[in-house]
Length: 321
Image 1 (cartoon, rainbow, N blue to C red):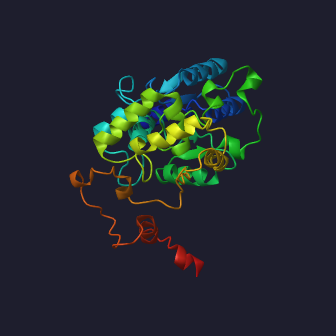
Image 2: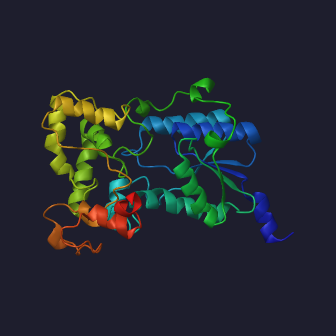
Image 3: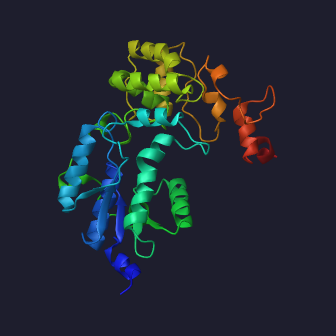
């Protein structure tokens, strides 16, 4: 028997991307119900307790215990001492040249790829994600990225007949963080919008302070066009006006309510996917002299987001014609 065949026998057939969110737990339950426990791996990235809620960690343990499976970790080598802010400060940037948030790359993507290369096999392994039927763009993107590297993916919540819709059906309470946040992502998610950061400002001043320090060190803002320091008086006024810190309200309704309560509130619409700016608009005011010049080549007077859209082949004027 060749070494390759031996490896194939050892490689798991089913790898569930077990993030700690409710959707990934449902995927784990569906996969085990269909295929049994044998050759199923619950693959997780443990995140520092400053960023990952303690009840998310509890939830992961409860689901794994119910399934009778261990949690397999693919971690950043210093996950227990470095959070998302430490990672991006070490890298000197929030985002890479391709626009991807670097904390995700270092804390999750890089360890995930290394684990697959060491333990899985493209010939026998399928990777499962918790995207549902409404997330077709995410499904297409993930399937194409991993498919280009030879990996098979599957999406039980979108493509399979459902046998379960809540972990409460097996006696497991979802993470308490869902009472405030939409996802089980890091508190202080560097991919999130202003509504998330308002919740962080109110509920986690320690995380807010670390995020401000990261902006000051790196010289770029986390959010498009405004620093956390500039947001503080706005958020403080929202608190005084009684705006509830929650992500459970859709962002349009959230900001409409905030505008009613704070008449002088500037427009704080969530960042739009279709207005992807060049990196220069994320610079912190006053830091420009310490940073390299903008490389997007936008002509004087041209809006950077519109210019970048044209460069990417998304000229709205051409599309309207």
